[in-house]
Length: 495
Image (cartoon, rainbow, N blue to C red):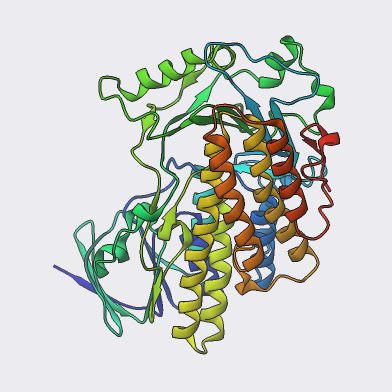
C-alpha cells in the first residue's frame, strides 16, 4: 500500500468556516498548511446568524491578510451583489416577542411584550444570516485555491502529541504520514485534540443548561403579517422584525426564526433542560409539533411550513474543555466550547479567536506565554457569556426582567463595536469586553440579582425600577443607543 509523506508547518483539523479561514490566513503568512476533514462539502450546519462584531472582525481579517475576496461577505449589500450564488439572509438586528402558552400573541401599544434592537443603519450595510452549507464551502474553496493541502473524507488513524506532532491519515485507502510543529483544532464538537490529550470535560461548571429541536423549512409565514393582523403597530418598529434574528420568548425557553433570501427558514426551539427534559416517548418531529401546538400564534406562523430535512433533536448544547491551548496547539473558540445561540455570538466569537491566534503565530515570539493568555481569555469569555445567557433564561417568564438584563449583551457588543471602528481595539482584548474587569463584575452582580428577582412569585414594581436604573447606570461609554430608556418603549434604533 502506497504511503504519502507531507511537509507541514501547521495542521488545521476541521473545515467549517473557522478551520478553512484559519488555514487560509496561515497560508497567507507563508506557512505550509494541511487541512483535514472527516466529512465533505457542501454540508448542512447551523450557527447561521452574524452580528456587527462578526462583520468587523471578518473585515479586519480580510484586510490584514490581504483577502479581498472575503471582504464582500461583511455586509449584506456587497455580499448580494458580489456572490449572489452564496445564499444569505438580511439581518437588521434582533427582535423578541413574548409568547404565553395557550394564548395568541397580544400586541400592546407600549410594546412591553416586545424588544427590537437595531444592529445597523440600513439594508446595504446590514448583517447577514449565513446559509452555512454555501458559506463554509466558499471558505474551503478559497483555502484550497491559496495552496492549502486539503484532505476530505479522511480518518486520522494516529494523532500523537510531541514536538512535532505525529500524524497518520487514511483517505480512501491512501495512507498519509507526516509531522507538524503546530495543530489548530477547528473540529467543533468533535474535540479531536481534547480526545488525543485526554483533556477534562468541564461543562459541569456552566450555568446554562439547554437543548434544542430544530430544522430548515419552507413555507414559513412572515411574523410581521401575523403581528399586524393581531393589531400590532409595525410602523413603530425600527426595522422589519422578520429581517432579523427573530426570537419567540416563553417561560422556560425560546425559539429562533432566521429567514434567507430564497425563503428558506432556519428555526428551532431551545429549551431549559431542567424544565423540559427530553420525553423519550416522542421522536424529534413529534416533539416539534407538540411545541408548535402550545403557542397558537407560532403555530399559525408555521401552519404551511415543510421541513426540507428531518427534524433534529439534541441533548445538552453546552460543552467546554478545561484547556484551550498548549505550547504547540490551540482550539478555536467553537471547539473549546459552546453555550447557546440566544445572542448569535458564535460566529463573532470564532472570528475573534482566529484573529488572536493568527496574530500569535504570525509574530512568532513568546508563543507559549501568549497561548496561555489566549487560553485564559477564552475561559473569561465563556464565563461572561454564560452569566449573560443564563440570566436571560432566568428572566424569560418575566419578560421585562429578560429585556433589562439582556442590555448587558447589547451594551458590551455596542461598546466593542465602537472601539473597533475607532481603532481602540487591540486584537488580544478578546471578545465582548471580557477583558474589562469592571464590566464583568457588574454582569456577575446583576446576574445574582436577576436570578433572585426571577425567583419571586410577584415582582415588585419598585424593585424592577431600581434594577432597570442600576443596569442603565452601568452601561459603559455614554450609552449612545439609549439602552434601558423607558421612553424608547423597547424599540432601539441604530446608534
